[in-house]
Length: 121
Image 1 (cartoon, helix red, strand yellow):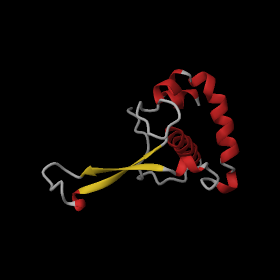
Image 2 (cartoon, helix red, strand yellow):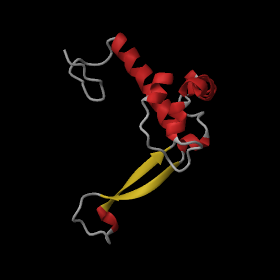
Image 3 (cartoon, helix red, strand yellow):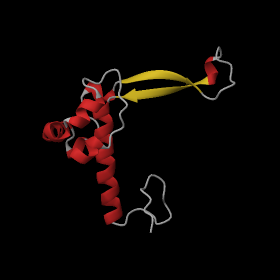
């Protein structure tokens, strides 16, 4: 958990209770509490449905699709959803566990390479 916290990008959402940099600096102290939070909030039979409402809230920011588009035209924009850093951390941990399980059980096709870490040999 501590390593996962430290790997978080320094970005944060307006709804984050503490700055991401501070969370990373205190990773050893907060890691056991986050583990307990995640264990309590994500029962195995209800993955994703028991998360706190703050994990599901996002700040939506319009972003111009590409320069040169008409900035007055709403169709020139795409929405960017900013989730809280704790929500992103949970998603990364669950994704890592899922991918590790699928790889260990050889359930992923060998030619399927999207979203996998690429290891140089």
